Image (cartoon, rainbow, N blue to C red):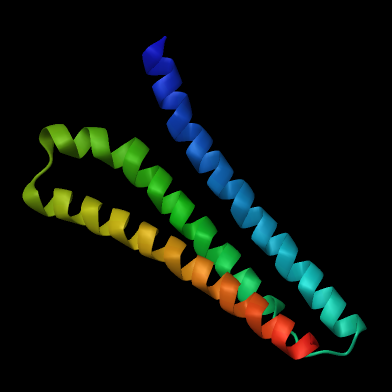
Length: 114
């Protein structure tokens, strides 16, 4: 039972990641529509970029943790383990970049509208 809950916690992490990425896409679309309607500079593309980056990182993270990790931890060579850790680092750096793009995009949008 505990192993099922442990595995479900990993999947809920990825599912929430994907929901957040979809919310960023939606947020970018709403920003784009509002800025066009009000004839303001469009900064919604940054939210789209952040959503795309976050979605890519979620997929890489999911692939590394659920496909590569168990296989390479037992039988992998040093190069395969290095690749796995590089992919993990890339996915986490992508999350940070996506968050920064979202904050900068919203800050620029608010600065232009105020």
